[in-house]
Image (cartoon, rainbow, N blue to C red; front, side, top):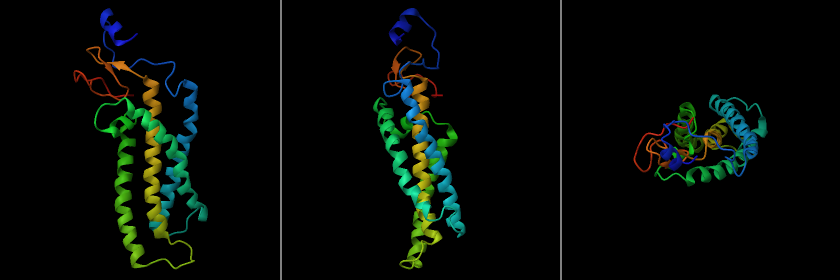
Length: 204
């Protein structure tokens, strides 16, 4: 039942948006294709955090040279994240695309991603100064500070990919569209109606 039908029937507004049989790329079963990438993003985040701590403490990397595989893994999870991000933001008319992109995320995941982004910038500046003060020896294994500098960015990208994929799955499961209390159609990530400004509710 669409918003106009609800208005004609006088049905009371319910903040939770109605579900849909087709909510992701043409079918519900397609969602399972994103779950492995979501798991990889969280795994990459954990391994990047371990690598970062080892780099800061000046100890050997648990994965050795294989740690650089985390650099390639970013592209594996970012590609699907960028694809769903475009779909997520497409129907969102507000000026802040990040609100639409992370609308389905719990608060802790949003703040964690923001914190990793800020940390990546500060960490890069500090580590770059350390590297310039004591340049690595050519041909020698990468010193811990190099892993600390690289893993700072890894954490942010893996966290952003995980947040984007998780948000997309949650928002699309809630439903592709809904109605505000005044029966205006709203997009999935909308918190306030774009027509009348009425509060719609946070996506679950």
